[in-house]
Amino acid sequence: MTTAGKLDTARLQALDAAHHLHPFTDHRELGGRGTRIIERAAGVYLWDSEGNRLLDGMAGLWCVNIGYGRSELADAAHRQMLELPYYNSFFQCTHPPAVELAHAIAEQAPAHMNHVFFTGSGSEANDTVLRMVRRYWDLQGQPLRKTVIGRTNGYHGSTVAGASLGGMGAMHEQGDLPIPGIAHIAQPYWYGEGGDMDEDEFGLWAARQLEAKILELGADRVAAFIAEPIQGAGGVIVPPATYWPEIQRIVDRYGILLVVDEVICGFGRTGEWFGSQYYNIRPDLMPIAKGMTSGYLPMGGVIVGERVARALIDEGGEFFHGYTYSGHPVAAAVALENLRILRDEGIVDYARNEAAPYLQKRIRELADHPLVGEVRGVGMLGAIELVKDRNTRERFPGKGAAGSLCRDLCIRNGLVMRAVGDSMIMSPPLVIEPQEIDELFDKAWRTLNMTAQQLGRS
Ligand SMILES: *Cc1c(COP(=O)(O)O)cnc(C)c1O
Image (cartoon, rainbow, N blue to C red; front, top):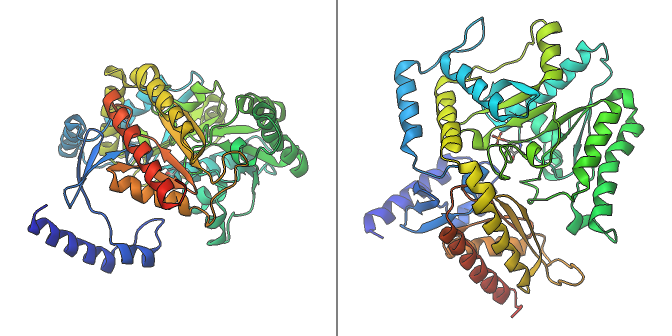
């Protein structure tokens, strides 16, 4: 820790406070604490401006699937910038990286999903979803089918459509959201909301809320259902095994479109290429982003199944929708290289066969800790839910205070986990090695002990 480093930190923190508005941040609270300046990263580790090394248990924001520091992606960006830094794909034009990427994604996607519409982010992907779903039903001669059903505590991004499709109450309150034509049903959160039902029973109950909502709104007015295979931002909520098969039955029965938001689960997070493959479901639309470029550049998209693609292509005429950066050549070149690495280095297979089974074994050991009510997870996703009383599931007072405390202690111990309420969540790079998983859980256990101590529980 050099003096120069410290001065730089203070200067950057002051400028940050003076000029930078952060996403999802209480700036008054941030001002009191000062921002942490992340300077560089390699593999699964981050270094801050004070020289502290942190194990990144979140892969950035669920996105750095291949880990940090892969020079191949930098080389791909450099080459593409010199060759063709920008061109659009409006007006009868295209360019090699967008074509190759659409092809590569179609190869990995479920067999009936062969087209990709590119966006700049996951939120834009969900804005595109809303436009496409409504356009689809117009083309079917059913313009009254407008309503999209999402879920309470679902997350589909932060733009007006994304936040409306999502079910985050705090986001809705700040923007007169949701916009009209969007409805929400209960989430399949058994530990928090299952009451006296057993897990399978609750999964069926939660899925059947969809059927009840369809009947309430009128089956001829419902356009689509949107959900994450596993809720991420909502707290890594893994649905009971009975949930997705029942959802599939219901969307099939009423003929509504199924939108599976793969922004987190896509590109290997569950140990399969897509969460839809993990759960064996048949989406019509899959929004993607995050792991698509491993976060090295911003990019998103919607993978479109045959049903919607045929309508748009064969009957649709011009679809008045698109972004300046749809299919951006540099982002596409980086995504393509990221996909090549995921595939050729067997990273998705490694996640499925080695990293995920070990991560899931280690996280379940934390269930023995007196502070822990439930651990859950699938693939390279996990959550540790902190409770005051393991028998009654009673929470700590001060909504999320125990989680925030635990998160701060975690960072002090050199580990990044995120807190959602009192759930500690993790989503490390897929390439994390077994001894790094050991380090993650040693630090997590130590942090739980410190948290228990500070909460006066030991
Ligand atoms: C992060 C996320 C989004 C939004 O993506 P952005 O790139 O932040 O706009 C949408 N859906 C899910 C499931 C996400 O996790």
